[in-house]
Image 1 (tube, protein in one colour):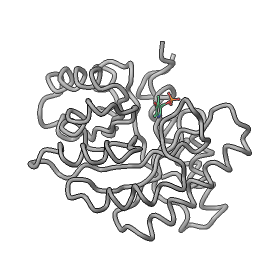
Image 2 (cartoon, helix red, strand yellow; image 1 turned 90 degrees about the vertical axis):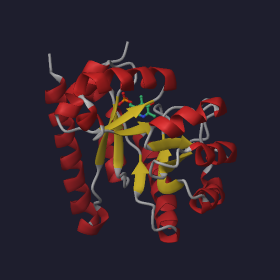
Image 3 (cartoon, protein in one colour; image 1 turned 120 degrees about the vertical axis):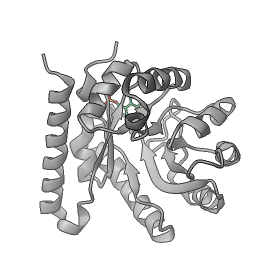
Image 4 (tube, helix red, strand yellow; image 1 turned 45 degrees about the vertical axis):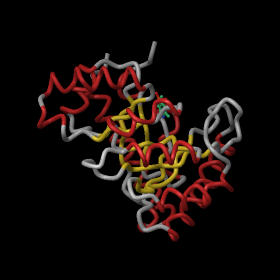
Length: 239
Ligand SMILES: *Cc1c(COP(=O)(O)O)cnc(C)c1O
């Protein structure tokens, strides 16, 4: 039985090793820093608290009502000062009637995939808060079951996001098909990286390529990921 603290240490080691391999393979300059996002869907506020006490302050949630409830509980548990250090990432599908709360209670939204959502998040972001950080979700394997836009449409949506005062375009995010071969997976990551590189050249705010989950941390970092989103390998299997 491993503790969450042990798991975090192991995942950090995996990230470090993957970065070292990638800098050996591609040269130092192509090895960006890789952020670890703790994905806490179906986890308790107490489990999030354990992650925070290990210095893991980037927290990702998929379901709005679950997230809001957990945020409140957690704030009571850890106090305002520690709570304020947390960066909240929304990483679930977005219904347009949920955008107001997402704009109020999150710092990042990684699953933006249409104009209507972009406009609503911009309008509804409270003026006393910093601009909301946005990643465009790409449906890299064109799966019907998944949200996201096709790669070719990234530039149009990016241009609008960049033009809006209450949003900051940070980059791209994807959830590749988990059932493809390693070779196909690597190809998917490569396509994402190419688009990310082009986007970075257009917009100075772009610095985030969010890809890689428990099962494919290494392949994603090899493919240029700057942020891996990990749930299972930190907290155990979800029931
Ligand atoms: C659940 C989830 C993750 C984490 O997946 P694990 O396989 O548990 O690491 C990452 N990203 C998104 C968008 C998720 O929904």
